[in-house]
Length: 87
Image: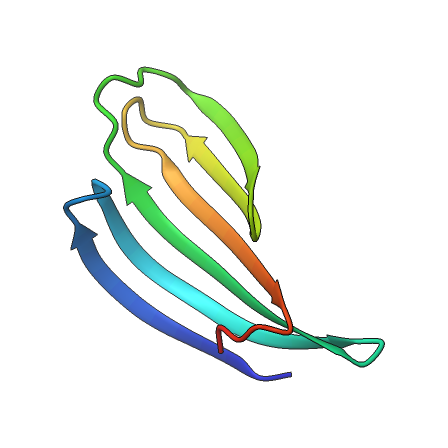
């Protein structure tokens, strides 16, 4: 398994998100190579006054928002690519 991590610690003005870090790895299953990426960040969403968790599936994986402080959810994104390459 090839595992790499990177501390990003940058502010994305367009997405209103502070990117903390990401972890990338490859996994092998029945001869197929899957490239995986797990990223963490904090978003600033002033209109959203909620506490809890929300998740949805996107084209390549899952997005999870975990909000313990109103308007400041933790964003966790798991991306998976079969045959592609993130690592």
